[in-house]
Image (tube, rainbow, N blue to C red; front, side, top):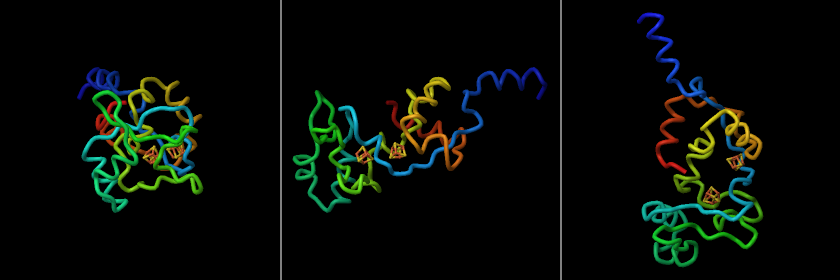
Length: 147
Ligand code: SF4
Ligand code: SF4
């Protein structure tokens, strides 16, 4: 490959081409705070119900709300996700947590520019530290669900 070809390829490389570090400390900060949505689909609801040993309908009645055509997990009045244990501050369905949670912090909105990633690192103590995720891993997470 010529030098020219190579530089062309690098031009297309996203700014995080060398990968990004992330290791969740399970501090719970991204599961609380300002009111928001944790979007869930039927497959995700089923998986969480299974992990909790509940019937899907019972799980939905207790933990899910309709938002237009979509569904979101309910929040406590203080903004905590209903799946966040108020005492331990850990997710009670961690193994089956929704894609939106599993793909954090590698969301489009956090990766647009370096400054967006910096802002993410300020709110998430696990972002920017720990394991190095490759470009391929980041892109796979980013494309799994756009938020
Ligand atoms: S804010 Fe970051 S470190 Fe804390 S629970 Fe969320 S992903 Fe993990
Ligand atoms: S489902 Fe679990 S990981 Fe996702 S926001 Fe709720 S508590 Fe956090």
